[in-house]
Image 1: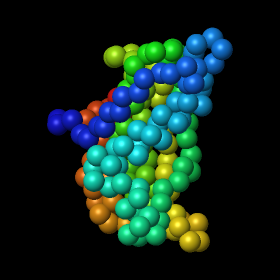
Image 2 (image 1 turned 120 degrees about the vertical axis):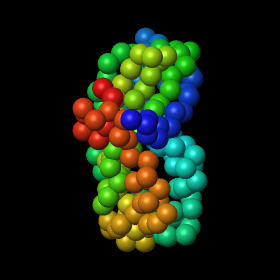
Image 3 (image 1 turned 30 degrees about the horizontal axis):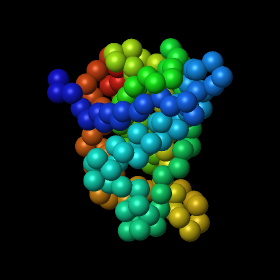
Amino acid sequence: MTKSYEHRHRIRVYFEDTDAGGVVYHANYLRWAERARTEALRDMGLPHSEMQRLHGCFLVVRRATVEYARPARLDDEVEVATRIRRAAASLLLTQEVFRGEEILAVIEVTLACVDAASLTPRRLPEPWLGALRARIATDDPSRPGGMAP
């Protein structure tokens, strides 16, 4: 089976990312995931700014869960892999934080599209919806949404 779309975003762990013990503070994984999602959309030619400017809407986090496996430390180079699991009324992504081949954290995030003026939910506009659906992860049929563990 052909590997589906996966965006990778590299990050260097700086002192500001760590706690007093030199270990990455847990909330920074969510910050990195946000940055990686933004870059994934930009890589697809779908920047947030265009969604706001052309369609008067934007994406908000509706739900996020994080499973921490191993700590990242000061000066590590990590990568956040972003994959699309579902694109419908909401957008479901899995984001994995790696150091080399080692998984440090797995983040599942549900995004909702909201109208900029009313902040009420609305459908994802085209071409975003079509482009996201075309990149849904399907490379591991044994897992829901095709995601690797």
